[in-house]
Structure formats: C-alpha cells, structure tokens
Length: 538
Image (cartoon, rainbow, N blue to C red; front, side, top):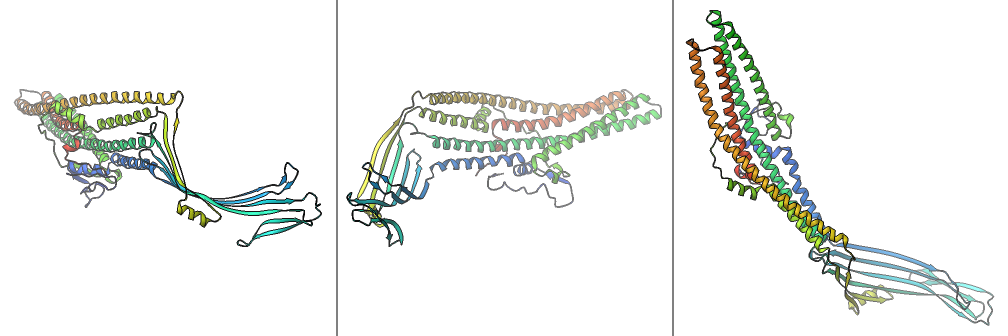
C-alpha cells in the first residue's frame, strides 16, 4: 500500500466512501486498511496538520524576499522666489526666481553574501531668472517702465525689464537654463566583519528552512499517531463486538440454567433457593450484556470520529470489522528497537533541528560582537548642458566619470547588548541540548516499556486461552455432576461466571497484544514502515 499525502493534492481516495451507501443498508464492513485510508483522507487532525508545511513554505519563500531588488522612481518640481532688497552699499537689487525639474530612478538590493548595491541615476533641469542693474548715481530717477521678457519657445513671460526715463539707471532679469545630472552610478557596500558570514536575512532563511523540515516531521508524526489510533480503535471495536457475543453466551447459559432449575423446583427435585440464585445470575448477565453493548456503541463512535470529517453522515452506519483478532508471534530485540527509535522518531528529529536552529542563532549573535567594518565604493558619470539632449550626449560619451572607494568602521563602546545576546543564545543552546538528551532517554524508556508490554500481552494471550479452555471443561464437568446430584446450582453459576470472565479476558488479551504492537511501532517511529506506507510531502 502506497499512500502519498500531499499539501496540494488529496490522499488516495478510499474505494468505499463512508458518507454514501450504494444501498439502504446501515452496516459497512471495513478492513483495517480501509479505515487507515479513510482516516488519512478525512481525519480532522491530519487535515489541520497538513497545512503546517504549506504555511512554513510560504514563510520561507517570504524570507527570500529580502534579496528582491527594489525599483524606485521619483519626479519633482521645485519653485523658489527670493525677495529683493538693498545691499551693503545701499543699492537696491531685485529678487531671484528659479524653477527646477528633477527625475531619478534606480535599483537597490542585497545579495546573499551581504553585499548591498544601488544602481541608478538623476537628471535635473533648472531655469533661473537672475537680476542685473547698471546705475549712474548722477542721474536722477523720475520714471520707471517695466517691459516683459518672453520665452518664444514656451510662449510665456519669464521676466521683466525695468528701465528709467534717464539712461543713468537700468535693471532687469536675465534668464539662464541648465540641465545637469549623473547617470549609471553604482554604489556598493560590503561588510567584512559584522554581518559578513551571517546577517539577519541569512539567519531568517536558515531558521525557516529548519522550520519547514520540522513542520513536515510534525505532519509525519501526526499521521503516525492517527494510524496508531485507528489501529487500536479497530482492535478495540473487534473486542467490543466479541465481548457482546461472550455476554450474550453468558446470558444464554444463565437462562438455560434458570429454566432447568425452575423445572426441578416444580417437581420438588430442587430447592427454591437454587431457582432464585439462577434468576439473580440471569439479571446480572443481562446487565453485563447491556454494559457490553454500550461499550460497543462508544467504540463505534471512537472509530467513526477518527475516520470522518462529517460525523452526522455516518452516525447511523454500523462499522463491522472485516478482520478478527489474532496473535502473530513477533521477535523482540531491545537494542534494535532503540536504534530505530533514536534514528526514526519524528519528535527526536524535530528536537535535533531545533538544536540546529539555535546553533545558527549562536553563530549570528557571535558575529554581532564584531565591529561594523564596510568596504564602500561608488562609480558613475556626470553631465551638464543647457538642454537634456546635451546632457544625455555627455552621458553616452562618458567624458566626466567619478568614483570613490574607501572603508567605514563603527565600533560600539561597551557592546553590552550584543555580548548579553550572545551569552543568552549559548545558554539556550545548552538548554535545548539537555532537552534533546532527556527526550532521547524518554524514548528509550518508552520503547523498553512498550516492548515489555507487548511481550507480556503475548504471554497473556496464551495464558487466557488456556484458562478459557479449562473453564469450559470445568463447566461441562460441573453440569454433569449437577445432573447426577453431586453438585449444586450455585457452584455451576460460579463456574459460568468464571468462564465468561475467562472468555472476555482472552479476547481482551488479543486486543491488548495487537494494540501493544501498534504502540511499540509508534515508540520506535516505524509505524508507516510497519503498515507499508510511504509519505511524500510536496
């Protein structure tokens, strides 16, 4: 059986869907394999846990977004009007009016080895109206005329020319326009100490990679737990069904004895007390049967809850196990079981990944102890002309390059935060390491206990089977003695109860043995291999 639970496609579809019947019957016969397939497709715990790797993968992909470049573009228009006044010599001067347009764009980002880059350029166009004044102090000013200055290209007034009625004083505004900028500049910053071998982005990616593996192991562990729970619920349901049969047989024996005693009392061959004892046993057997049927109903619900996400649809369906309880002998080896558990248990592997994550944190915090030493560099081209065309022509020619190279260092005084963060990270790593050792020891104890329990339950199977056979023989002999007048009805009732208990204990031992094998596989981390399942999380 190959099961491929996936985050984007569902598991293998169960051939007989629990929620729909092809006929009006409310009984459904299911093998253990059918139950496991249904649980892996419909169990709520598995469905919920199946989202964990998907969410972890989204988080990891988001962390890689730290290396995505950022494109920027900006446009700006500036206007500035400075008022006129009187200079230090007492001469009046006019204000200055200027307008400029600026365009800039660029790409910037971070590379996986910590190099920051910025590539872009800026172009601006500036138009300024500058004042001019020619003064003849000997000429009086009696009249001022203002004449506009037109820009014929743009058909707008760009200034005014002021004149007097005498030639002694002339002032006005002269326009000037300049286009300038830099383009193709490249800025680089490379850390060589702090944030060199690991930085916050690389730390986040490393941690999220381990979180993804942890979530996949968590899903695997949930599937293993669900498979084990289904297996044990299936065996417990078989026990409940068989126990109902045992109690029905006990009631049948009690009613038969009651009927025989009643006839004997009627003919005077038996005391009325014996009849009352038989009646009491019938009442007790009937009560035991009711309790067994209630246990059966509860076990039906336990299994249904594991198999479906729509309990209402199968509430009235009676699940009938297609298999019976058998005790298949197993060979047990504690050392091999320990090796399997320590290498295969998902919770152990998760804890080891947690320790690995903390190792990255320690590495990062240690790197933060170093000074910030960055190599920096800039390279690009300048241009300046009256028109944009001239500016871009200079850019193409590359006549005016510029560059810079250097280093920047920043040393925190005291560095208290970094030192304490580093010590805290190391202490946390030691704590996680101890927790891992504790979990390994607990796993070994769990495996030891599960193995001994399985061995004990197997021995119980044989012992209870022999006890059941002996009680059947004892009841047969005691009934013959009663028929010959050499025993009492009370003694037969006692042996009947003992036989019922022996039969119930026998099937309980069979169920417990199979449950113990399932629990041992879970403790070893070999549940999926034991059930011949393979899990492929995509």
